[in-house]
Every structure is written in C-alpha cells, then in structure tokens.
Image (cartoon, rainbow, N blue to C red; front, side, top):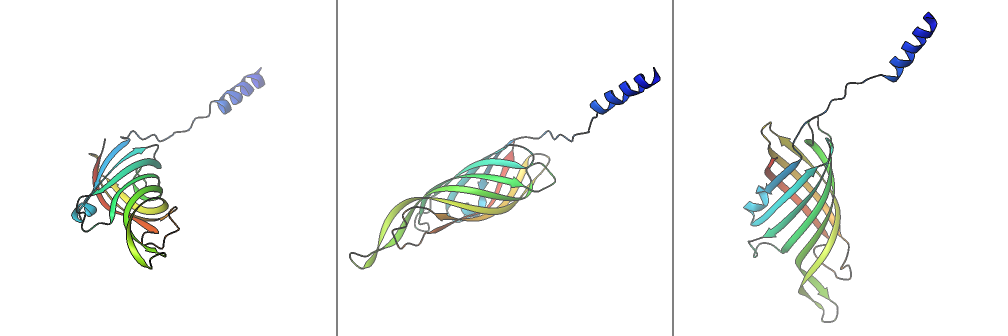
Length: 174
C-alpha cells in the first residue's frame, strides 16, 4: 500500500511541476516624433505596437515642410524591431524596414546627354540599429539609424539608390 501511495505521489508531483514565470504588465502603444528631422525641416512621426517583451511593429510617415532643403517629397515606412534590453521593448534593437519613398532626383538622360530632374516613386528594403530608453511614466527617448536600397527605377543613373533612416525621437508609451 505504501508503494502505491508513494508512486501516486511521485506521479502527481511530476505532472504538477510548476515554474515561476516572470510576466510584465506594460503599455503596448507608442507615439513618437523625430526631433532631429524637425530641426532640419521635416515632420516625421511614428506609431509602434509592442507585440511582446522583445518585438514590435511600427509605421511612420515623413513629410518635409522645408522643400528647398529636401529632395524627398514623402516617405511611408513599416518596420519590425527586435529588442535586446532587460526592460520590455527597450534598450538596444535591430530592425528591418520597408519604405515607400517619393523623391525629386537628377537622372542621366542618354537621349539628350545630360541630367534632368525627375520625380520618382520607389520602394526600399533595409536594416537599422538603435536604442530606446523608457521612463516609468511612459516617456521615451529613441536614437536610430539605418539604410535601405531602392528596388525599382534601376534603369536610371540616379542619386537615390540608397535611402537612409535617422532619428532622435521623443514620445510617449501608453
């Protein structure tokens, strides 16, 4: 009888093994504005949705208002980020992004033998790195940079084969 009770106890204890799982309760939405590009004449905002403690998806739009200093007319960017920090969705991160961009570019025209200005719409794929710091109250600071390659309009000898992402952003996690 003792063997049956001990056996049943061991069986139940092996099935009922429990682990302490650390769960974070944190806000999953962020709204940010790029202060660096604002200084240079471009309005750049983004929204990020945190999927879990290590990854997030985001979208951003960049609309220059100082058109004499910018060849870019607009960009729409979608990105995926993977975070390596100790806090949820904070610290060092790597990202992959896709960017729809519209630029005024100078392209070489073989027919007439000189460069002419064209407005080109293209889509770029790229990668980036950055860091994010978040306070307990939800205020955040982010620094990021990346580079992507335009995939279309390759028939032109052009300036914007590569396109960049750069930012010092401030925002709020809610």
